[in-house]
Image 1: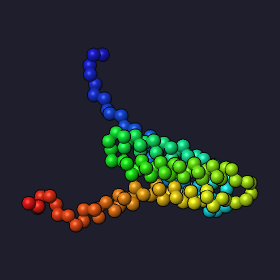
Image 2 (image 1 turned 120 degrees about the horizontal axis):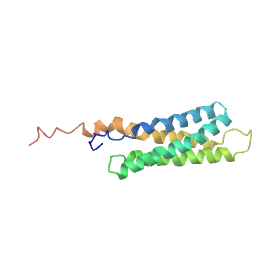
Image 3 (image 1 turned 135 degrees about the horizontal axis):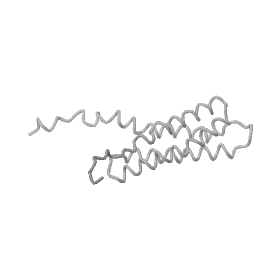
Image 4 (image 1 turned 180 degrees about the vertical axis):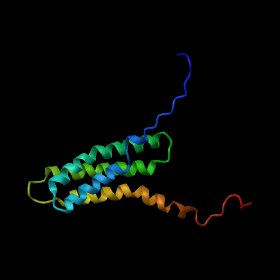
Length: 137
């Protein structure tokens, strides 16, 4: 009873994926493009809490000192765009098609989610012209 046992540190990385809100947004965009406005509406509404969780996680990571500023801003932008798309789509008259603002908001949300990936791919280019510190005198 009095014996100390090592406890594994808790990790909440398994709680959610950064790809989950992007996937839901892409499915809503695909459903909207296919003319399935009802499915696009409901998938878009499901994507909003997923995007909120991703934005909250990114913002808290940034506030804890991790290098997540770009991810926090892009996730927050995507959340704003998803809320806009859902509100416009929900308020649209029935059987009138997809409002252009809703479609463009979904496209821009996908782009916002892609910004950190593009920055990650382009990061080695920042150091391409520099010599390593070991060889400089």
